[in-house]
Length: 191
Image 1 (tube, rainbow, N blue to C red):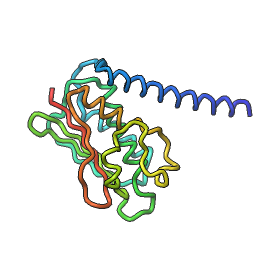
Image 2 (tube, rainbow, N blue to C red):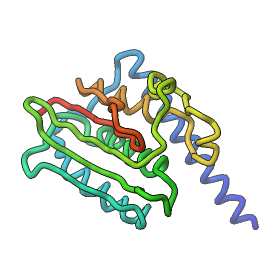
Image 3 (spheres, helix red, strand yellow):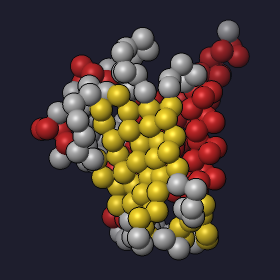
C-alpha cells in the first residue's frame, strides 16, 4: 500500500516537473531566449522512431506514412524538435476518433519543398470548430471541455511547440482540412 502511494506521488512529481519545464521554455520564448543546441537534425530518423512508438502506444490505429526518400535534414536542436514532433503525434493519437470508429486513422507525411522541410501529422477526428481554430495555440486553452474531459494535459503543448518552431525560424500551423480530419504542419528551413 505504501509502495503504491509512493509510486502515485512519484508519477505526480514527474508530471508537475514536465509542466514546470514547459512553462520555463515558454517564458524563455517570451523573452526571445530559447537557447538552441544547433546541429544537423535528420527529421526522417526522428519520425522513424516516433512511428515505432505509435505502433506500441496504439497498435489498433492504422498509420499511413509518406516520407520523401530525399533529404529531410534541418539545422536545429534535436531534443526540442523531437519534442514538437512527439507532441504533434501524441495529440493526433489522443484526439483521434475512438477505437472502433469508422475511418479511424493517423497519417505522417514528410517532404522537402524548395527551401523548407514540412512534416504534416493528420488524424481522423471530429474536427476543430471554427471558433476554436484561432485559439488552439493559446496557452492553457483546451477547447470544448465536453470533448476532452478524459484527456490529460494543460493546454501547453501546442503553444510550446509553436514557440520551438519559431525559434528555429519555422512555423507550426493548423491546416484547413475537410470535415472529419485535423492536420498540423511543421515547416522548418533546410540546413
